[in-house]
Amino acid sequence: PEKKTLLKITGMTCASCVKRVEDALREQKGVTEANVNLANEKATVTYDPSQVSVENMVSAVKDAGYGVMVET
Ligand code: 9UX
Image (cartoon, rainbow, N blue to C red; front, top):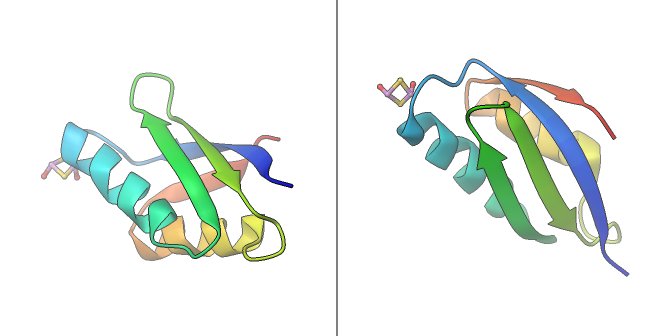
């Protein structure tokens, strides 16, 4: 079954930043949905925990150049 996680993203200042973070998350195998809100700096991610972990997502966001904390 799929799970959802909520991440706090820091360092985004424009719509292209949002796209970069969404792309970094969506590139992860096992991520089925990723949506980033610039105003509240939250990312909601739906994923298959048998294929990808929250730690994988954190690494991907950091590699894209942004800060990230796990909220739930
Ligand atoms: Mo626009 Mo977001 O240059 O870093 S992509 S501010």
